[in-house]
Image (tube, rainbow, N blue to C red; front, side, top):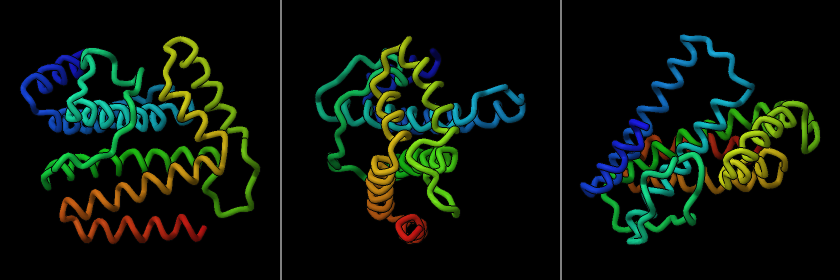
Length: 201
């Protein structure tokens, strides 16, 4: 609730990219607190929620900047506006925020890939592993109550190796491009190396 109110005020003040910075801080704090408090979370729950949060927040920001505003009071983790990836004349600092959101989102997708056995040093275990079934059950119960299109999209990614790979490739390419626009050439090179490892795996 506090985050939604802060986001609303920032949108009104025309400081949309500050919403992204606050979202990153919120996710960092939640990750640390859940670890220190040893909360009994389902496998992959925090990774999946963080992935959705990054994606939804960035989509909301881009929607606001595209002169097609949505109601910022709506919960960020419920509904996704149409996906837009135009640059809109972004400055370096705005590309930094975008790259940070994509970096965290990609990290969470990687973690979910490990859980789903889509990323492994061993032989493929098939499109749906027991761990993926666990995530399917988790998000199935959630989407039944909140009708979340973003959660359904994530479920689709986690139940198909081909869709997972396409999503990973698209996100990695977006991250590398954003880092270059932000002037973070060393980080872009590091991200490119990690991407190459994924492609060669």
